[in-house]
Image (cartoon, rainbow, N blue to C red; front, side, top):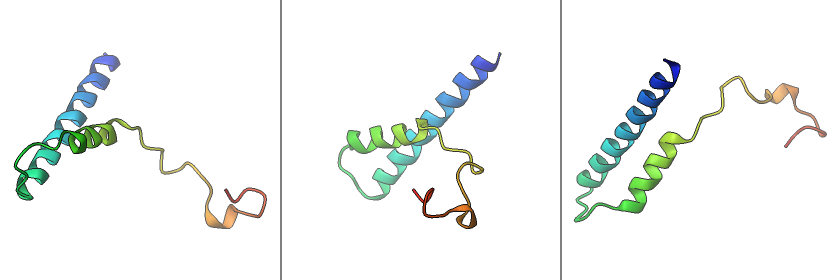
Length: 67
């Protein structure tokens, strides 16, 4: 069941990215679909984003872990 939900979410992310990119290109008056930009939009939608809680707060950084 979770796999089906993950697959549906993945497909929805792809569809949303395609829709948004094609809309952007149409607004800018593109005579043809920019396939590279479309691929970039899809790739961006599929890249997992790091959780907001990951990483260090500025006050937790020092010279040895500031990278």
